Length: 355
Image 1 (cartoon, rainbow, N blue to C red):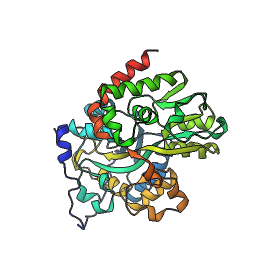
Image 2 (cartoon, one colour):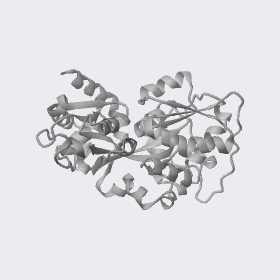
Image 3 (tube, rainbow, N blue to C red):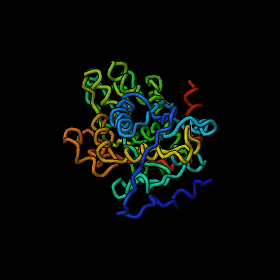
């Protein structure tokens, strides 16, 4: 089992630049589906069209989709009983899962040349799937002004009414500190102190009675589209998808957006075939290709990790990606959350219960 302190010493990849990758033949096993767990909603719909159906058509392997709730506790529970062959995880889940032996190392020789992917998409245990951004989404029809950044989410005078935040410390504490004027470069140094945590909760307390909490990432976009909240801290692609589905224009304030990387992993205990099953690697190989990634990013605007994907997209589609706003965004510090999430989750739950 790898310890957290060992994670930084892992060398990404495992393939030398320019190596010729062998072909993968995904052998279908009668009566067995390839079980892929993702996070549902419009994101899963986009994955189905861009990845799952093309994979089925190419290989003849049937994909069984499952929707996961999210969180490391769910991954730990699944580790005991299996059930999934490929799983989409968040950055903190990747780090914690590696440290606890929940995932199998990837055979990068059978997946992709690392030079064709963004550097942080190549991990010994994970293939970066897409980069999303937590942004301030808003319903122009519900507001009298135009919010420009996180501070407006906490301004009940200029922007009264319900607003939405993630139910949990990850992302939510960052948003509070950024709204309170903490510089991006000092964000995690501040959050790593007791004073910083108290500061974040103090600001959240000011708006708590006006907050609608979400724990499923599709919800805040839907609430905005239905006019149930005026503003929401939500992932950019979910806001765009909800606006498209409702044929309703929704706005996004990109200043100090928090970007985070989704990754594909292979559970150490898988649903079918064990380590001799080459179908999960065949799926990952397709998921690493520029064409499918471009198709995925066109359907829901999360930044692809395949370096060649943007060249296959239209200028309009590129303008909706988090990468188009990289100069005003910052990366979520997944190592911080891997080390501190349990402690801060307990703190958040106690604070939320103290109404």
